[in-house]
Length: 198
Image (cartoon, rainbow, N blue to C red):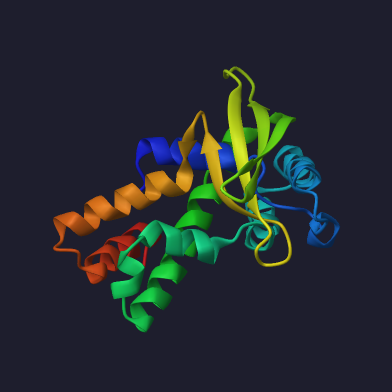
């Protein structure tokens, strides 16, 4: 269900998504938050350890740094209001599983990755922290990390790679699936179950 474009953005997003030692990353400065996330994740990706070891370290860290529930709700759009409480719960759980599987499934592609912070701006009431991400033998990517502090601590709520919003792309994909299925949230959930391997 994730398009190639969304997967590209998601793959790029893995470069900075999680803090190692979340307590250190709880400062209110969004730029410092993203820098710490990036430094810590680069150390995991480029460090020693098996894929499974790195995955074990990343999953809880992504949960800490990213507002997965808010992103899931945004991606369902207007259909969030029509979904039943059990559908909302299952959809959110599946969204989380698919997101984590996609991120951790691409770890091997990021050996040798580095990043440089560039700018910080206000965007729709949140902070947009700009970075340049470099991977060996690849063109640099401009990536903005949209950081919200609505929960009291900084959390990533979107990733914008080369001008394309991950959550908006995913929202459009879900709307297309729903449109082909008479706006039936249950049909989207069934497709997500397959994607999550359930």
